Image 1 (cartoon, rainbow over the protein chains, first blue to last red):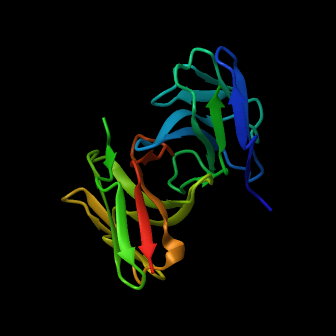
Image 2 (tube, rainbow over the protein chains, first blue to last red):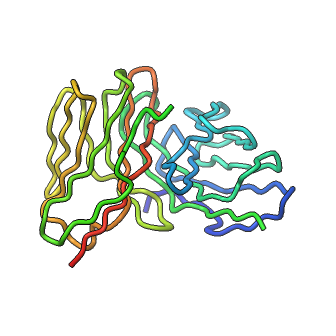
Image 3 (cartoon, chains in turn yellow, orange):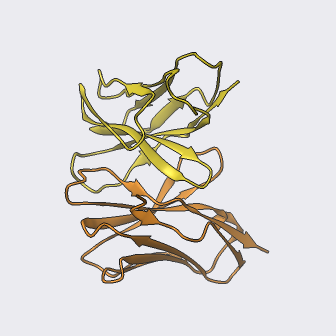
Amino acid sequence: DGGITQSPKYLFRKEGQNVTLSCEQNLNHDAMYWYRQDPGQGLRLIYYSQIVNDFQKGDIAEGYSVSREKKESFPLTVTSAQKNPTAFYLCASSPDRGKNYGYTFGSGTRLTVV
Amino acid sequence: DQQVKQNSPSLSVQEGRISILNCDYTNSMFDYFLWYKKYPAEGPTFLISISSIKDKNEDGRFTVFLNKSAKHLSLHIVPSQPGDSAVYFCAASGTGTASKLTFGTGTRLQVTL
């Protein structure tokens, strides 16, 4: 079955630590995205990548970093520079650059800073 | 700058009645619109979409209406069922945005018995 896998489902981080959220897809999609969901703010775009070895900042990229070394994988690192990292993080992919096919989403990772 | 707005954070509807969820947008370059449904602690799932060349698209109990002149779209669910209780996100993309979607803030629908 094709889909997007995010891991872990729950993640706890101490203040000052970097953490990496995993996102893997076997849909052969070109484009991948990271969103953050906070109560009352909908989904906000952190980073996106339309092709391997290339990625672009979204609306709230500060304090985050990504890599796209393989088509299937788009990990997100939440660095200590992110002032308010507690949120629900969603990874998504879409099949084609520049086309409006919509996204397939993973099931999300809830990150809590303790 | 919120380019896609869902002004009603929540909506309660009786089972069997119609649910109407609204969405407004400001970017005139948007030409494709989608609705996603999201349950707690899960990723959103695609529900229905509409291109700007149409003003209506229907899929079973779900119909999306687009009013381009008003930059407004709505999702109608008829009849509403308890399983429809979820958060609904409106999203838009268009010329110059590549495949990026801009999402609204969501509307929480509660279908009561």
